[in-house]
Length: 109
Image 1 (cartoon, rainbow, N blue to C red):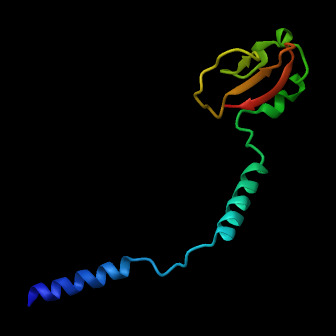
Image 2: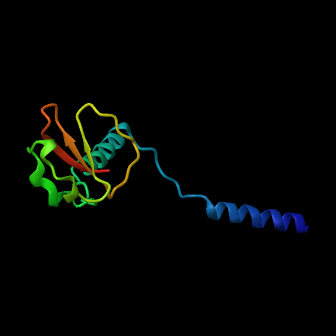
Image 3: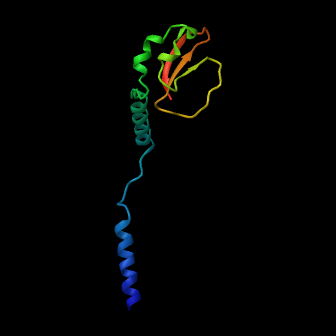
């Protein structure tokens, strides 16, 4: 008798933990949700975690003329065909140089 009571409690407990009924999404609904999520991610501005806004004046200048002592600690000046490590540090400023040797952009990482 105790087994049946225990089994009943277990069944009721498991039923309470199960999620409610959720209908399957159609392909059209899944596509809409995926596009909406992607649009939100693509159009969201990247956070300025490395204070790159303070250094936007460098864009267009010759990389050799950059005073690296004025850059934040850990900043990297990356030439267009140089190898760099793929570790991501949100507080690190990366100064990208184009093929012409001028600063083509800045990014955190």
